[in-house]
Length: 245
Image (cartoon, rainbow, N blue to C red; front, top):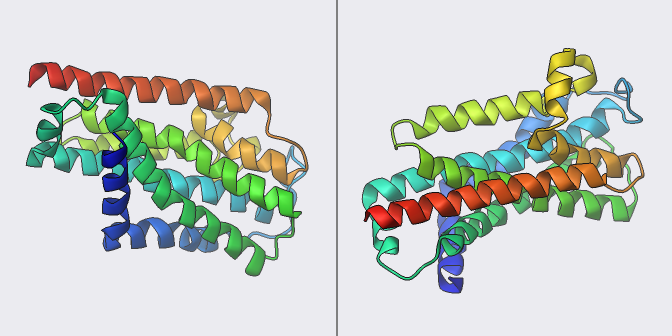
């Protein structure tokens, strides 16, 4: 299992096109969306638009790298027969899921750091050292949830359907989770849904720290619950395919 994890990380780092898109896209998107954001307070919070978008775009960028990257890569591996070869080994389902999650998380970390650097250097965001560190670590660890979801989707649907299904989940989670705009300016039904979906809890880790407090226990519990569900589902789908082989 350890060998496969190392292999997957090396494969991710050697994929220059994927690395460029995954690492450069998030800070570029942050500058496009938050370029005009000013010190206008976000309704219902203690944050201004610049602070809010820094965390939401770091979360959105990390989710992009780990969710979309995992879905399509697994679909290609299934078509090429790589996954079939792994099924012939004694690799457990948790080993395959762990390897994919670890590789995706390796790619997401640089993108998160770059967004934070852009926030400080270009947008003039000023936080305490502990806040910067906590936001970076929390956003990175939270991305594991969506990496596991990517593995599950990659195994759940066929190669032809993986892109539309993953994009539907990707955009739906981003919108309903308030990553594109503050939830307080969205319809009430979206706010009600957002309370129980992982993207809202994911972004809330960083916004709580920006406001000077620790991440809320409820948000951490929601993310851990989704991580168990997605990772468990991905491992079950891997074992299910193994029994068919």
